[in-house]
Image (cartoon, rainbow, N blue to C red; front, side, top):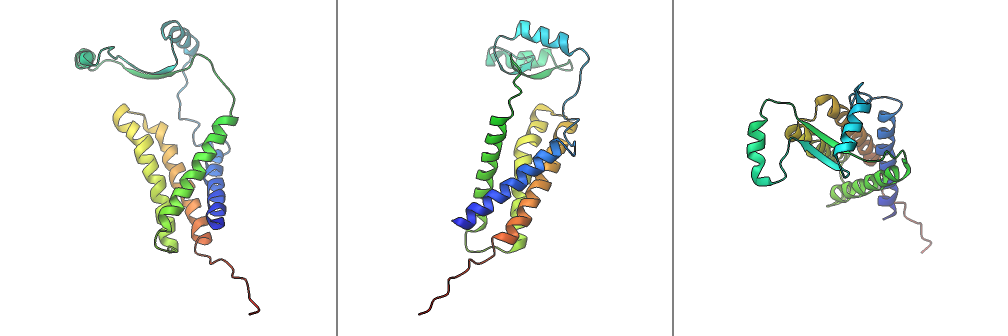
Amino acid sequence: MKKWLIGSLVGAILVFGWQALSHTVLGLHNNDMKYSSAQTEILANLSANLKEDGAYMIPNASDPAEMQKVMEANAGKPWATIVYHSSLSNDMAMPMIRGFLVTIFLVVVLIYLLTRGGAPASVRIIGGSVALGLAYWLQGPYTGHIWYQLPWHMIKADLIDSLAAWTLCGIWLSWWLPKQPKRSSSFI
């Protein structure tokens, strides 16, 4: 259990640390979101017309039965997905804590899966870790690219993050997990 806890904590620090570097020092996510010089006018219009926080797809239909008609009437015309918040919060503490806890959980799950059947080989540990990162990217950002046409510039850095961060975690775990715990010597 101690081996899992230490392995998970260090693995989570590596994954979370990579993500922090990629968003700050490395600047991989600098181009994720586009800038609009009309942002003040757009936000004023959104604030006047959207009454609650949430995700919106425009055009859309209030009645699911009408959706097909709305989609046909707007084929070839502009459309947008909007995540609207009525108030900007710059508090990063809770998102960082929650993100780190999720990362610890994911590393625990990875260790659990990798250690079924005994101590795994290093190549299996690294491969399993990279596979987890790739699965996360395929199910999350890439699925958004498929269904909501999230632009490539928005998900490219997430792919780099998934591969780099989980490779680092896999390298750490491939060194840490196969080590046998020290046995205490006995005088008997």
